[in-house]
Length: 438
Image (cartoon, rainbow, N blue to C red; front, side, top):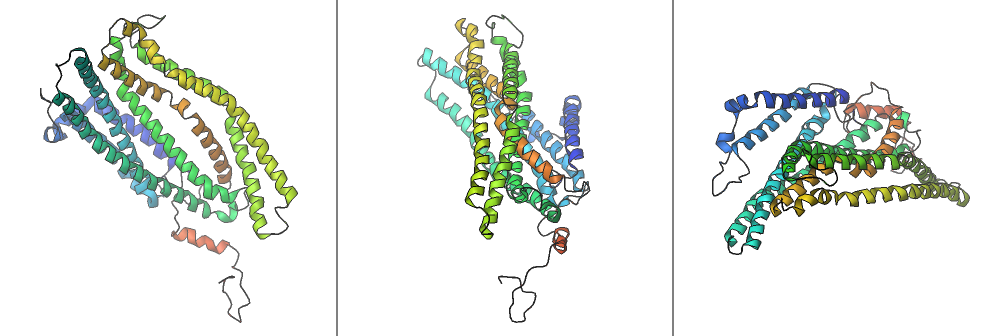
């Protein structure tokens, strides 16, 4: 699943984590010194003014983005020579870093938007409470400012979605021809054709989606946790508990942890049922495929038994999803009211302006959503576990030292044609070696 696309997967992912930790340490220890030497902030950055205090690309921000780009793509360089998977290097290594860079920049825009919401809604509150103090030009000016940021953001997200679609197809292609290069020893595995045709596509889609969400959640926590801790100073007290430092951070953490544990316990049986579901579906599909070419297959009684097996498993799955969805929707709907309950004493005391309330609500939502990544993604994780189990069973028939980085035009893959039986021939008037049907 991974060695078909990534160079030395275990080494690659562990070194990626180590490199990230090293880059963060360098940033905090030597970041200012490096900025004085190589930062493009003084050249490309915008200096805040009294007329425009909320500029997006300040010199400090330019240096931060420059550093993240440098750290990301410097990590890519040695992997061109490490491992035996240069065929997919530009997609698996450079492509993965590019997707993560875009996620980082999007989180940064989200943080800037959170600050903008505070100023904008405070202005709205001033306009509503003291008519005539806020001009129409001021309102339009704020909207134009956010438009300048959102339009490039939309363009980047659209291009990133297009890039991710190609990235996923390349990963699927890499898995497909990695498996097909070992097809003679895999063809006898139960549901082999489904593993190659369907499960490769599902695995790449699910893993990419979860990985991007996980990276986005971690980056969101890094950006919004300090912000939410600072905003918690405006929360006078929590119901029942009273005053707590960083109160909303603890509320978000406890709420997300409770939901994650709840859904994990309630849904513990679902991955096994999903795995069994694919087995009975594969058995029915295989019988129908045989029935296309063999008149004695897919007979009524056999088809009935295969379908009853599918039906029994689905009905059992529906029953388990019933109580899982009860727990899931009760938690998700209840979690929407947690920040309102936590802020209720401060709202009643008049300690929050409208803009500050919007800032706190948005920051709390970002942090809580990141904390409850597992809870939000649990049904997707169940599908991933099911697909992973099937592909792991499939890959157990492939030697650990098997070739990787294979594509449809790779000579190593084309050479496996010799392991197949000779093509059948027709009686074609002496023209030997013509494949049947041509």
